[in-house]
Length: 291
Image (cartoon, rainbow, N blue to C red; front, side):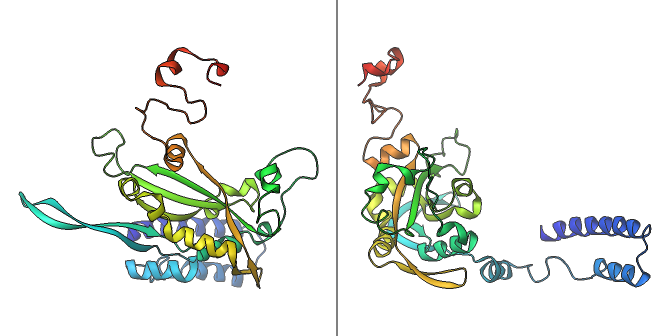
């Protein structure tokens, strides 16, 4: 695949070279300058030189892109029957979660937008445009005291890696926990570089073993961040910052699961706020009926 992409890019470079030299032919630049332009485009070195193997690609990601590699943690070993050459064979199945180092990923966010981390986004007028301007924030035991605390917005969602309408959709459903920082301006929070993974596992493992076991490592790091803080490099200077989970965000089904409610679409009460039953929701549309 890399070879095909390399050929495509080389052809585009050749096309660009002819366009540049064509434009330069109508100018008064020296022949020496044109020769340097040709030499620059005529490099025999491949754009993907040294990246042909998976090892070299991973090394490049670590060295230049700051890749944070996940750590596999075993939840349980179970015996399962699997088909092998037409026969049922009993094999071990590793049930795991994949954790991402919180402090390392936070450091990446510091490098991404350092000016945003230590800058207050509270408005000076009476308008509310962010969660840091609510009464709950002003009474928070950590965030209301530490001006530069890291405010983690934790997200949870399930995703399918195959056709969601197929009979195998539930088998391959994956639970994703990820976060961004409220310290960033809202316009940056949805950028890919501002979103960091926390934990990835199968949704079935999350249901079987529970939140406490799946998020144990993450919550331990949060506890350390709340009590002792951690040292980060921001704009070339080392500073110690505390932090905590400010909000946990999820869709309706995920919110029900996090709150300990039934999260299936077939449940009797589908809303944790109004406690309406399924039959009433089909015939009664006024809000005050459920209050």
